[in-house]
Amino acid sequence: MKKTLLSAILFAAVAVAAQAGTSFKLLSVGDDVDAASLRDYMQEQGGVAVELGGAYAPADPAAALDAIGRAAVADTADEGTFGVILFGRFGTDRPQGVCLPAERFAILNLDRLESAGDPAKVGRRAGQEGLRVMAMLLDMPVCPFPLCVLVGYQKTEDLDRMSGNFCPPCHEQFRQIAADKGLTLLETPADAE
Ligand SMILES: [Zn+2]
Image (tube, rainbow, N blue to C red; front, side, top):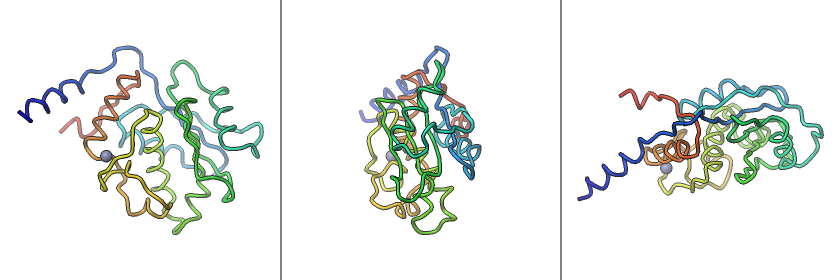
């Protein structure tokens, strides 16, 4: 009986949106943001399209992170943009990030990711946070499974003990919600097995 239910769920998951897809748009604010590596990681682990949007210069760099994110959506989003994700250097005295799904953006502060613990880990942490905000922008909940990047955490250093990718059920759910919302799905290595 369980197997039948599982088959039904899997069958529903393969339905893919037919219309021209949208994508996440990744923007970098300031130097020392490896946007291409982050895009590659988010695409490989997420299996949805992430467009490189290039450098973004906020009109008011001292504005609150949510104001910068809101302005970035107004300045850069087009009909092919599902949501805007900014990675930047905003200083250690500002929040680690802000994610507002209703306003279609997330903004992440690499200075805060770097300041906690080992600075060399900033790239991995940024990739993890990239996956987490993509899931949040799709309104996915946190995951109870410890070996999942969507598990809840307290401190920045906790990221280093956490998985760098989705657990299989979350990945399936992520791709299904993305397809339902019109995002372009990519072939992932897992699909080719
Ligand atoms: Zn999970």
